[in-house]
Image (cartoon, rainbow, N blue to C red):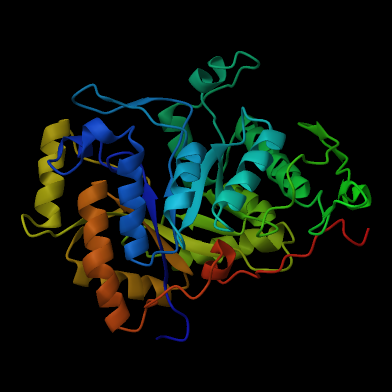
Length: 398
């Protein structure tokens, strides 16, 4: 195997990332709310020895173009909780918004997921920046950017104050969650039956977080997770969000173009880490790529054209789109690894079809080239990702 093996994950979003994916014969649209469907996808990913699956979520129901079908979702964290007992090595990373949720509840839910998965939990932190999402709660208003304004902000890197405030809040939320995970020392549970003491209260700590957005004393009511600190991730498209990821995340998903590749973004992420003074472990960089792979029935390009015809418009994405064979994709992944990314997160255009090709065709090709593992050798998500598996507790020696 190569001295630096490729890390590979998959992003799951219902029937797939194409709005018309649910209309494909293998997509099982009647089972999208069935635990068995999600279990089958996780089993496919684990069969392919993938690092993790991320599970998309949003507070807004998006409407698929062309046919009026709403892309509604189950709660991503609860899907991950259901997948925990039916998987054994696969990392489980649900999307959980920071904008309208309380970090105390987030920390408790993800710590619980880390327990039920025996150390395989992660979190993709995301802001919710639309007025419609804010209206669901009615506790505040959000000044929403138009599509054109958002595109210009991403292109220029100049975001209005409302966006800065959302990411300032998200930064605080991640910090609160991390502090709450540390608010119990690892040996705080003593379970001394004779002395009738379950907890050593001296090993529970107030976090005393005071900020513009949150005032949280703590401690948590859930013991420190098995990983100490479950893996925190973020999706980022611009320097402002790279800085957010560098402040609080272990891993950042980025969206390079096919033309430029990931090298320019890798440099921008490193610059962002320098600006915020990140210390310790470097921020891992994973490139996102939407894939429509060749199958026995059609080429990837033919499959995408058919899906576009069903939806009535051309598919567009924030991430680059790949159509072609697993062999060509393996070539691209090797090239991107050489350009400096730590891994790649694939977004299957049609979940069942493309994930099957990833697990059964792409992964064996990568293994033959010495670019990917042939077995799981670590039991925790941090271990699989190459992160330190022993994480010091910030309060243990305070």
